[in-house]
Length: 310
Image (cartoon, rainbow, N blue to C red; front, side):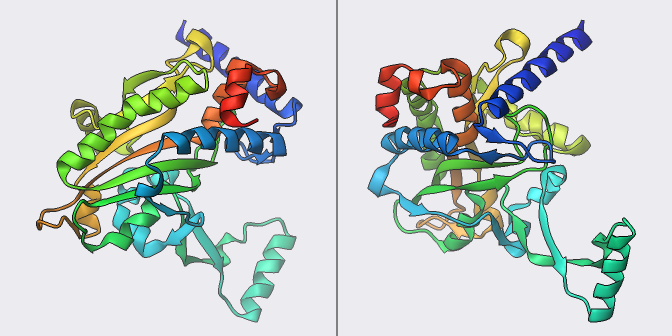
């Protein structure tokens, strides 16, 4: 029975992918989970972001936009490699001599792997939009802490045919760095506000206590602790009916003092800073809109189009 259900779910995912490609909304590549976006898809994302920004903190938040790569030294301090090594993306390049380049080309001409001639650089692919922001706050926070608006591309190595599981995707995050109470309040308040954003888009969402996909045996304990302490709540939408438990489109997370410790961030009163973030998955929300309202945005409910300025 479980195999049958899995097969039905996989067929539903592949059918949705075929619809998106057939409508020209996504552009296929030779790599599973890696897509180009059409102008219309980008219009949908921009419309969603207008609703997200309207619900956000506005001018009270410092706005930052980072490139999709950041320093390896900063990546190391996030400790991401310890928990999610299988999702990590590193940047390598050629730094050798002319002779070594000739060897690389000869191997390439023979259809052999030429990766062994590449060396790690000082950059990594960004795994979470907020990660590049924390190094800015090493030291003592101002009174009241920090409130950030961060938007950018993220990479996670999760090749899949489910269009909702992309390897490169965008997150719009609102981040709070401050006391434990400030971080917890930020996370808790955004559960309701996130549901309101999705309701404005006429999406039926459900809050679910969740955990990150920590790696390995130790990761199972971390995941259990995260759920037990209620540190992560996902807002999910059922893209495939009752075939699964829903797809997370918004994530509300309390990091406790993790980034405060690893980036040496202190509150104004000398305590270790806590942090929390809410992340809106822009592509996933766009997919939920297309799945809910249809492949032709011109035929979506007028109230939704007006809200998105489409």
